[in-house]
Structures are given as structure tokens and as C-alpha cells.
Length: 171
Image 1 (tube, rainbow, N blue to C red):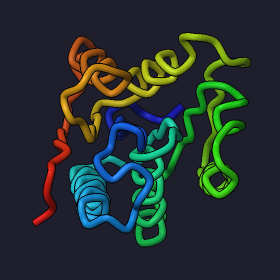
Image 2 (cartoon, rainbow, N blue to C red; image 1 turned 90 degrees about the horizontal axis):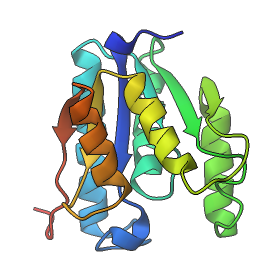
Image 3 (tube, rainbow, N blue to C red; image 1 turned 180 degrees about the vertical axis):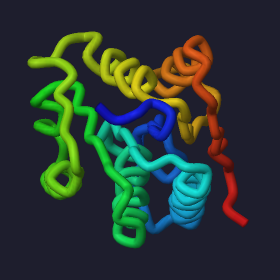
């Protein structure tokens, strides 16, 4: 079991809520990816070594890629894929499914939170991550949904939050 004190988790929006949707070449997306990478590196400098990712489309995958890049430079980093159910990526388009599989395979640990899809398995995954971390990095635009739920749960559990607000324009 990895120590909660050196563990960091992530929450963020799926492409449908992002202004650029699936266009990862958009300047705003590239800017957010850089801010996520900077936050991951800053958390490493603060002593965080274990990173939990919920593996959802969009910001979760950006986070996973940033942590795996950091692990390439810092071999003491570990990455855990917190998977809500075995069918999480089954309905995704083929290139995103392939990306998901590649990233899960690259992780050091894989935790299946629910043996099958249920209406609450995503929230269960989010609670699992927060319960096993002392820091949450969030890419959040203020709207209701899973990201807000996860942030509120983290607050209720006394988990520190690094908020990376989604902004309309990249500098």
C-alpha cells in the first residue's frame, strides 16, 4: 500500500465539457496540458511520488501522460490507474481506446474499483482516489458534474487541492 502522504490524484473534465472538445492541437488544450505537467512536477518537488489517475477521456488522460513523462525523468514515480469498471473504454472511438490501453499498460498499478458498470462506479472510483491521496490536482470550470463532486469530496476529507481553472484563452 502506497502512503497517502506521498500520493496525489487528479480530476478534470471530459472532452464534451472542454471548449476545444477533442481537438488537442488547440492552443488552450496545449496550455492546459503544460499547466498539468507543471503542477505534477511541482507536486513531485513537494515530495509526492505516487499518482492516481481515473483514466477517463480528456483531462485524466492528459494527467496520466504528464505523470508518465515525469516518471521517465524520475524513476521513483509510480502511477496507478484507478479504473471504475472493466468496460470503461469499450464505447470509445478506436484511437482513444488504443490510447487508454497503452496508458493503462504503462502504469505501475491497476486498481479495478467495481467488477461491473453501475450508475455509481465513477463516483466510487473518485472516492477511492481521494481516500488514497493527500493532494488533488483539478482542472475545473465550475460546472456541476463529476469534477465538482470529486473536489467537494476532497474538501470534506481534508485533502489539499491545486486548482487549474479552465480558461477561455491561452496566453
